Structures are given as C-alpha cells and as structure tokens.
Image (cartoon, rainbow over all chains, first blue to last red):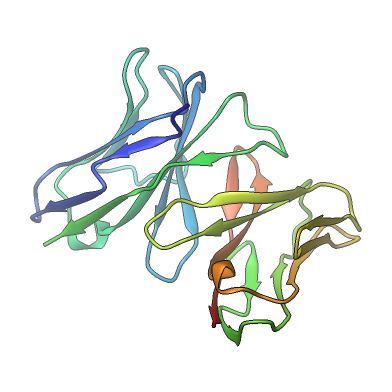
Length: 116
Length: 109
C-alpha cells in the first residue's frame, strides 16, 4: 500500500535548464497538491489539481512554472529556465476527495532542487 | 506576514522536560491541523482540531484549539529524543491548506 511517491529525491540543474518533478499519489487518490519549502520556513501552497484539471494555481508563479495531472501517469511540476531562487524542497501531497476543512493530506518525501 | 504565526521558532530542551508550542492567527479557522516533519521527509499529520475549546490527546501530546478558533497549542509531556522534528500547524483557507513556518524542536538525551 504505497504512499505518495516523488522522484527524483534530489535534482541538480544549472541556471536556464528545465526541472521536471514527478509525483505519484496514493493509489485511488485523485487530488494532488504541490508545496514549496525553503530552509527554516513552512510549506507554501503552489497548486491544487484534480485528474486532468487545475483547480487552484494561485500560489504558483505565472511564468516558468506549470503543473499537470494527466488521466494516466504521475503529476508533473515543471520549472522552465530555472534560476537560483528556485532552489527549494518541493513536496507533493494527495487526498482521496475534494478538499474539506478536516481533510487529511498525505505527503511525499519531497524533491530537493538545487540550481547551480 | 504569515497567516499562521508559530512560536517559538526554535526550541532545544533536555529529555524529560515539558514544553508548549503555539500557533496563532488573527483569522478564524474552521479547523486546524498539526503536522510533524522530520529532516528529509514530508510532513505527517498528527491531529485535526475542529471545535473551539477542543482538547485532543495523542499519548504524551496534548492539542488544544482556542475558543475563538484563531489559535492552537501543542503541549508535550516528558519529551523524548524521538520527538525531535519540525512541528507545523496548518489551517484550511479557501482552496488550500496554509501552513505556519513551524517550530523546530530538538530534544537532547
């Protein structure tokens, strides 16, 4: 009964390259959330997706960042033309149903992105 | 400014001591959650508090939701080295869950 799987665990990119972060939710979960965490900080919401739909992307920068959750396959967070300020830990969480006030999020172990 | 302010930011104590950490906001939340995060891992949900004034216990951890549902506290009795980690509070806000910056707890043996 696998939990949320994120890969890669660590990703190193040079400035200007593209970063692709993958997230496979808990089996049966159709809702995925992406968060970003800087050292000594909490989690900042980026985007909330349901299968094939973006529900809320209010926390995601308008440029260079995109996310998808296709019908088949993992959710992908894509960062184009990375800059040093993109270096952070990116966490994915999944849940089995539409977000409710006391819903439980299951988190993956994160992808640590380092931009050289 | 953070929607949820957590204090203290850092806390280092000896094994066996008691401690309380706080999560405060000027906004009312329908519920608050507490998560614990260990280095290199994602947060894990500890508890959800829903009713103002509610108290929940999880072994040596006691969680309280303020009467006005704007704040919460986490009290740990007789802390153990295994309690070391980042404690995050989170509240449901519009379409997403907003997190505080966390309290980083270190329990020394």
